[in-house]
Image 1 (cartoon, rainbow, N blue to C red):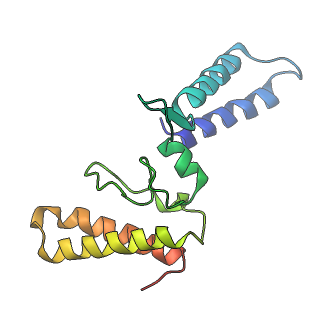
Image 2 (cartoon, rainbow, N blue to C red):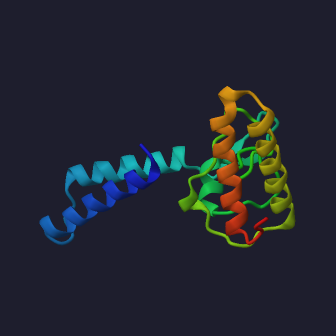
Amino acid sequence: MCREKEVLILNIFRWYNQDHVSEGVSSPVNSRIEKTMDNYLAEEEGDWEVTDEGLYMATRGFLIRRGYCCANQCRNCPYINWRDNSAWRPVPHEYVRRMRVSSKAIVGALALLSQHEELVQHGPIEQREDNQTMIDHYSFLLEQWGAKQ
């Protein structure tokens, strides 16, 4: 279940508890749900992963919640596919928050936009839809960042 749905469910139960249980008394169901939600968010939505080498790496969830690309080529970056990973998927547009980013992020987005435009024209036909999705994503980022072509 995605974080937004979990938070919504938790808020609904909190609202229900406020209106239907006397002040200062918590329902056992609500307490159990809150503990489950808190544990899930702490375990699944942590901000950092530790690599085998002992290095701390920002999680995709953290980078999405942060709302912008820092241009440090983070391994889990949801904004720019710095590592040319075929399984990579862009962040939904509603999570892009920052309107100004470093010039490195703009250069990275421009380079990948150009690469995907080239692949749409000259690449395999079966990959055109995926490349068009990436073109739309990078075009959106560049527009949001004030770097229109």
